[in-house]
Image (tube, rainbow, N blue to C red; front, side):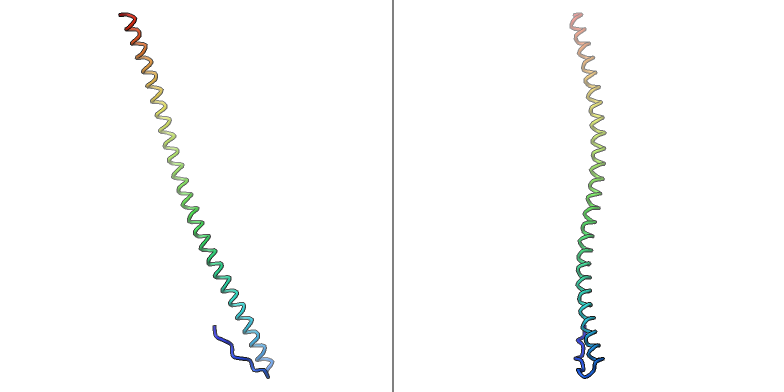
Length: 101
């Protein structure tokens, strides 16, 4: 930012313009600092949003895996109970054969 010309001390208008220029320069630097802070905050929020999106995707993937495993578990329990029934029938048949021989 350009430096203001030194004021002409004999001119009230020159002194006012110089003073105004200094105030505007201060405000400009404050606004620049605030913009820098907001840009940093924006980066942080974008990173958090990216992380949240990733976690959301991970959670959805885990939910799908859970559903698949739950279904597989149900199928395996059903198969196990059918095997237990079949084994019991074979055991009864074997006992009948043992008893008749």
